[in-house]
Amino acid sequence: MERRPVDSLMAAYAMVSGVVLLLPNRPATWPVLATFHITLAWMALGWPGGAGLRARIGSTFPRSARVVRAWYPLLLLPVFYAELEVLNVTVHSGRMFDGWVQLWEEALFSGQPSRDWARAMPLLLLSEPLHAAYMSYYLLLYAPALAIWLRRPRADFDLAVFTVMLAFVAHYLFFIYFPVEGPRYRFDAPTGGIENGTFYRLAHQLLEAGSSQGAAFPSSHVGASAAVSIAVMRSWPRFGLLLTLLTLGVALGAVYSGFHYVVDVIAGLILGAAMALVAPEVYRRLQGRGRVRTEFSR
Image (cartoon, rainbow, N blue to C red):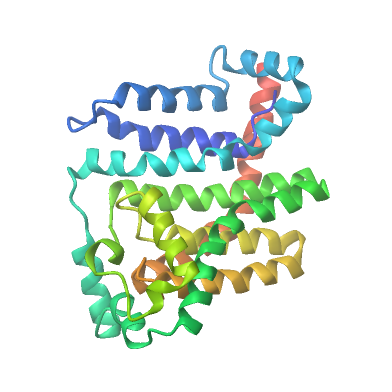
Protein backbone atom coordinates (compact mmCIF):
# COMPACT_ATOMS: atom_id res chain seq x y z
CA MET A 1 0.00 0.00 0.00
CA GLU A 2 1.50 3.31 -1.10
CA ARG A 3 2.60 5.69 1.61
CA ARG A 4 0.95 9.07 1.16
CA PRO A 5 2.58 12.43 1.89
CA VAL A 6 0.30 13.01 4.87
CA ASP A 7 1.45 9.66 6.35
CA SER A 8 5.06 10.83 6.21
CA LEU A 9 4.06 14.13 7.78
CA MET A 10 2.17 12.44 10.63
CA ALA A 11 5.09 10.09 11.29
CA ALA A 12 7.56 12.99 11.37
CA TYR A 13 5.39 14.93 13.80
CA ALA A 14 4.89 11.89 16.02
CA MET A 15 8.65 11.46 16.32
CA VAL A 16 9.68 15.12 16.66
CA SER A 17 7.01 15.88 19.26
CA GLY A 18 7.34 12.54 21.03
CA VAL A 19 11.08 12.85 21.58
CA VAL A 20 10.39 15.19 24.52
CA LEU A 21 9.11 12.15 26.43
CA LEU A 22 12.77 11.16 26.85
CA LEU A 23 13.37 14.21 29.06
CA PRO A 24 13.58 13.89 32.87
CA ASN A 25 10.41 15.95 33.49
CA ARG A 26 8.21 13.58 31.53
CA PRO A 27 4.77 12.90 33.06
CA ALA A 28 3.76 9.70 34.82
CA THR A 29 1.61 8.85 31.80
CA TRP A 30 4.59 8.97 29.44
CA PRO A 31 4.42 5.23 28.53
CA VAL A 32 0.89 5.75 27.17
CA LEU A 33 1.90 8.83 25.19
CA ALA A 34 5.07 7.16 23.92
CA THR A 35 3.08 4.13 22.78
CA PHE A 36 0.69 6.39 20.88
CA HIS A 37 3.53 8.25 19.14
CA ILE A 38 5.46 5.09 18.26
CA THR A 39 2.34 3.32 16.99
CA LEU A 40 1.36 6.29 14.84
CA ALA A 41 4.84 6.50 13.29
CA TRP A 42 4.98 2.71 12.85
CA MET A 43 1.63 2.53 11.05
CA ALA A 44 2.18 5.67 8.96
CA LEU A 45 5.64 4.73 7.75
CA GLY A 46 4.84 1.08 7.17
CA TRP A 47 7.59 -0.19 9.45
CA PRO A 48 7.88 -4.01 9.78
CA GLY A 49 4.40 -5.38 10.20
CA GLY A 50 2.69 -1.99 9.91
CA ALA A 51 2.17 -2.08 6.16
CA GLY A 52 0.92 -5.66 6.34
CA LEU A 53 -1.53 -4.78 9.09
CA ARG A 54 -2.84 -1.85 7.08
CA ALA A 55 -3.25 -4.10 4.04
CA ARG A 56 -5.15 -6.74 6.04
CA ILE A 57 -7.48 -4.12 7.51
CA GLY A 58 -8.00 -2.64 4.04
CA SER A 59 -8.88 -6.00 2.52
CA THR A 60 -11.25 -6.90 5.36
CA PHE A 61 -13.03 -3.54 5.58
CA PRO A 62 -12.22 -1.89 2.24
CA ARG A 63 -14.70 0.98 2.31
CA SER A 64 -14.32 1.82 5.99
CA ALA A 65 -10.53 1.55 5.78
CA ARG A 66 -10.42 4.02 2.89
CA VAL A 67 -12.53 6.54 4.80
CA VAL A 68 -10.52 6.21 8.02
CA ARG A 69 -7.21 6.39 6.18
CA ALA A 70 -8.30 9.56 4.39
CA TRP A 71 -9.64 11.29 7.49
CA TYR A 72 -7.42 10.06 10.33
CA PRO A 73 -5.07 13.11 10.40
CA LEU A 74 -7.99 15.49 10.94
CA LEU A 75 -9.64 13.11 13.40
CA LEU A 76 -6.44 12.97 15.47
CA LEU A 77 -6.27 16.76 15.87
CA PRO A 78 -8.12 16.79 19.22
CA VAL A 79 -5.66 14.19 20.55
CA PHE A 80 -2.63 16.15 19.35
CA TYR A 81 -4.09 19.31 20.86
CA ALA A 82 -4.92 17.74 24.22
CA GLU A 83 -1.38 16.48 24.77
CA LEU A 84 0.30 19.81 24.02
CA GLU A 85 0.25 21.13 27.57
CA VAL A 86 1.73 17.86 28.82
CA LEU A 87 4.52 17.97 26.27
CA ASN A 88 5.43 21.64 26.77
CA VAL A 89 5.52 21.21 30.55
CA THR A 90 7.90 18.30 29.99
CA VAL A 91 10.22 20.61 28.04
CA HIS A 92 10.00 23.79 30.12
CA SER A 93 8.69 22.63 33.54
CA GLY A 94 5.68 24.93 33.24
CA ARG A 95 7.51 28.05 32.08
CA MET A 96 5.58 30.19 29.63
CA PHE A 97 6.96 32.90 27.35
CA ASP A 98 4.12 35.43 27.60
CA GLY A 99 6.52 38.05 28.92
CA TRP A 100 8.39 38.08 25.63
CA VAL A 101 5.22 38.28 23.56
CA GLN A 102 3.79 41.07 25.71
CA LEU A 103 7.00 43.05 25.19
CA TRP A 104 6.64 42.61 21.42
CA GLU A 105 3.00 43.68 21.70
CA GLU A 106 3.92 46.77 23.69
CA ALA A 107 6.66 47.71 21.24
CA LEU A 108 4.42 47.33 18.19
CA PHE A 109 1.12 48.71 19.50
CA SER A 110 2.09 50.80 22.56
CA GLY A 111 -0.26 48.73 24.68
CA GLN A 112 -2.09 45.42 24.99
CA PRO A 113 -4.94 45.41 22.43
CA SER A 114 -6.14 41.98 23.56
CA ARG A 115 -6.85 43.51 26.99
CA ASP A 116 -7.90 47.01 25.99
CA TRP A 117 -10.00 46.73 22.83
CA ALA A 118 -13.09 45.12 24.36
CA ARG A 119 -12.79 47.32 27.45
CA ALA A 120 -12.83 50.42 25.24
CA MET A 121 -15.73 49.14 23.10
CA PRO A 122 -17.96 46.84 25.22
CA LEU A 123 -20.73 46.66 22.62
CA LEU A 124 -22.91 43.59 22.14
CA LEU A 125 -23.38 44.49 18.48
CA LEU A 126 -19.61 44.19 18.07
CA SER A 127 -18.88 41.49 20.61
CA GLU A 128 -21.40 38.89 19.48
CA PRO A 129 -20.42 38.83 15.77
CA LEU A 130 -16.72 38.70 16.67
CA HIS A 131 -17.18 35.91 19.21
CA ALA A 132 -19.32 34.01 16.68
CA ALA A 133 -16.65 34.55 14.02
CA TYR A 134 -14.00 33.20 16.37
CA MET A 135 -16.07 30.06 16.97
CA SER A 136 -16.48 29.54 13.22
CA TYR A 137 -12.93 28.18 13.37
CA TYR A 138 -14.29 24.82 14.50
CA LEU A 139 -16.53 24.72 11.44
CA LEU A 140 -13.62 25.74 9.22
CA LEU A 141 -11.62 22.71 10.30
CA TYR A 142 -13.99 20.07 9.00
CA ALA A 143 -16.75 21.53 6.82
CA PRO A 144 -14.50 22.50 3.86
CA ALA A 145 -12.79 19.09 3.97
CA LEU A 146 -16.19 17.38 3.96
CA ALA A 147 -17.35 19.56 1.06
CA ILE A 148 -14.29 18.63 -1.01
CA TRP A 149 -14.71 14.95 -0.03
CA LEU A 150 -18.32 14.97 -1.25
CA ARG A 151 -17.26 16.49 -4.56
CA ARG A 152 -15.13 13.33 -4.93
CA PRO A 153 -11.85 14.70 -6.33
CA ARG A 154 -9.67 12.60 -4.02
CA ALA A 155 -6.45 14.27 -5.16
CA ASP A 156 -7.87 17.66 -4.12
CA PHE A 157 -8.95 16.23 -0.78
CA ASP A 158 -5.58 14.64 -0.06
CA LEU A 159 -3.71 17.86 -0.87
CA ALA A 160 -6.12 19.93 1.21
CA VAL A 161 -5.70 17.65 4.24
CA PHE A 162 -1.93 17.68 3.83
CA THR A 163 -1.94 21.49 3.63
CA VAL A 164 -3.98 21.88 6.80
CA MET A 165 -1.94 19.30 8.71
CA LEU A 166 1.34 20.92 7.63
CA ALA A 167 0.08 24.17 9.14
CA PHE A 168 -0.96 22.44 12.35
CA VAL A 169 2.35 20.61 12.69
CA ALA A 170 4.23 23.91 12.39
CA HIS A 171 2.03 25.56 15.02
CA TYR A 172 2.04 22.63 17.42
CA LEU A 173 5.83 22.44 17.44
CA PHE A 174 5.85 26.08 18.55
CA PHE A 175 3.39 25.21 21.33
CA ILE A 176 5.66 22.42 22.58
CA TYR A 177 9.01 24.20 22.38
CA PHE A 178 7.92 27.85 22.85
CA PRO A 179 4.72 27.75 24.95
CA VAL A 180 2.71 30.93 25.44
CA GLU A 181 -0.47 30.97 27.51
CA GLY A 182 -2.10 33.97 25.89
CA PRO A 183 -4.04 36.90 27.34
CA ARG A 184 -6.92 34.71 28.52
CA TYR A 185 -4.65 33.47 31.32
CA ARG A 186 -2.91 36.79 31.99
CA PHE A 187 -5.75 39.35 31.90
CA ASP A 188 -9.31 39.41 33.19
CA ALA A 189 -12.00 38.45 30.69
CA PRO A 190 -13.65 41.48 29.06
CA THR A 191 -16.94 42.55 30.60
CA GLY A 192 -19.00 45.76 30.56
CA GLY A 193 -22.20 43.99 29.50
CA ILE A 194 -20.80 41.88 26.68
CA GLU A 195 -20.50 38.93 29.06
CA ASN A 196 -24.27 38.52 28.75
CA GLY A 197 -24.03 37.69 25.07
CA THR A 198 -24.81 34.15 23.90
CA PHE A 199 -21.73 33.71 21.71
CA TYR A 200 -19.53 35.33 24.35
CA ARG A 201 -20.65 32.74 26.91
CA LEU A 202 -20.33 29.85 24.46
CA ALA A 203 -16.81 30.82 23.40
CA HIS A 204 -15.55 31.30 26.94
CA GLN A 205 -17.18 28.10 28.19
CA LEU A 206 -15.74 26.13 25.30
CA LEU A 207 -12.20 27.29 25.97
CA GLU A 208 -12.61 26.84 29.70
CA ALA A 209 -13.59 23.23 29.13
CA GLY A 210 -11.08 22.26 26.50
CA SER A 211 -8.20 24.66 25.93
CA SER A 212 -4.60 23.46 26.09
CA GLN A 213 -2.31 25.71 28.11
CA GLY A 214 0.66 27.07 26.20
CA ALA A 215 -1.02 26.95 22.79
CA ALA A 216 -1.33 30.65 21.97
CA PHE A 217 1.66 31.70 19.84
CA PRO A 218 1.35 31.58 16.88
CA SER A 219 -2.45 31.40 16.79
CA SER A 220 -3.39 28.06 15.26
CA HIS A 221 -6.98 29.31 15.01
CA VAL A 222 -5.85 31.96 12.56
CA GLY A 223 -3.05 29.95 10.96
CA ALA A 224 -5.15 26.87 10.30
CA SER A 225 -8.04 28.98 9.02
CA ALA A 226 -5.69 30.73 6.61
CA ALA A 227 -4.29 27.38 5.45
CA VAL A 228 -7.80 26.00 4.90
CA SER A 229 -8.77 29.08 2.89
CA ILE A 230 -5.72 28.82 0.63
CA ALA A 231 -6.11 25.05 0.23
CA VAL A 232 -9.75 25.38 -0.82
CA MET A 233 -9.01 28.36 -3.05
CA ARG A 234 -6.91 26.12 -5.30
CA SER A 235 -9.81 23.93 -6.41
CA TRP A 236 -12.87 25.94 -5.34
CA PRO A 237 -12.13 29.70 -5.59
CA ARG A 238 -15.55 31.06 -4.60
CA PHE A 239 -15.75 28.87 -1.53
CA GLY A 240 -12.17 29.78 -0.70
CA LEU A 241 -13.05 33.48 -0.81
CA LEU A 242 -15.85 32.93 1.70
CA LEU A 243 -13.45 31.07 3.98
CA THR A 244 -10.97 33.94 3.68
CA LEU A 245 -13.62 36.32 5.02
CA LEU A 246 -14.30 33.93 7.89
CA THR A 247 -10.57 33.79 8.60
CA LEU A 248 -10.54 37.57 8.96
CA GLY A 249 -13.39 37.24 11.43
CA VAL A 250 -11.49 34.59 13.39
CA ALA A 251 -8.46 36.89 13.58
CA LEU A 252 -10.43 39.92 14.79
CA GLY A 253 -12.47 37.83 17.21
CA ALA A 254 -9.34 36.26 18.68
CA VAL A 255 -8.06 39.67 19.78
CA TYR A 256 -11.35 41.30 20.79
CA SER A 257 -12.34 38.31 22.92
CA GLY A 258 -9.01 38.41 24.74
CA PHE A 259 -7.98 34.93 23.63
CA HIS A 260 -4.88 35.93 21.65
CA TYR A 261 -2.34 38.71 21.48
CA VAL A 262 -2.22 40.58 18.17
CA VAL A 263 1.30 39.21 17.72
CA ASP A 264 -0.19 35.69 17.99
CA VAL A 265 -2.62 36.49 15.21
CA ILE A 266 -0.02 38.04 12.91
CA ALA A 267 2.43 35.18 13.45
CA GLY A 268 -0.33 32.61 12.94
CA LEU A 269 -1.45 34.25 9.71
CA ILE A 270 2.10 34.34 8.35
CA LEU A 271 2.93 30.79 9.41
CA GLY A 272 -0.36 29.30 8.21
CA ALA A 273 -0.18 31.06 4.85
CA ALA A 274 3.47 30.11 4.40
CA MET A 275 2.77 26.44 5.08
CA ALA A 276 -0.17 26.50 2.68
CA LEU A 277 1.93 28.07 -0.07
CA VAL A 278 4.78 25.55 0.20
CA ALA A 279 2.47 22.58 0.78
CA PRO A 280 1.97 21.60 -2.90
CA GLU A 281 5.71 21.35 -3.55
CA VAL A 282 6.37 19.45 -0.31
CA TYR A 283 3.42 17.19 -1.16
CA ARG A 284 4.81 16.38 -4.61
CA ARG A 285 8.25 15.57 -3.26
CA LEU A 286 6.93 13.30 -0.53
CA GLN A 287 4.57 11.67 -2.99
CA GLY A 288 7.49 10.84 -5.26
CA ARG A 289 9.43 9.31 -2.38
CA GLY A 290 6.42 7.25 -1.34
CA ARG A 291 6.04 5.84 -4.83
CA VAL A 292 9.74 5.01 -5.08
CA ARG A 293 9.59 3.25 -1.73
CA THR A 294 6.54 1.23 -2.79
CA GLU A 295 8.16 0.12 -6.03
CA PHE A 296 11.36 -0.81 -4.23
CA SER A 297 9.49 -2.82 -1.62
CA ARG A 298 7.89 -4.92 -4.34
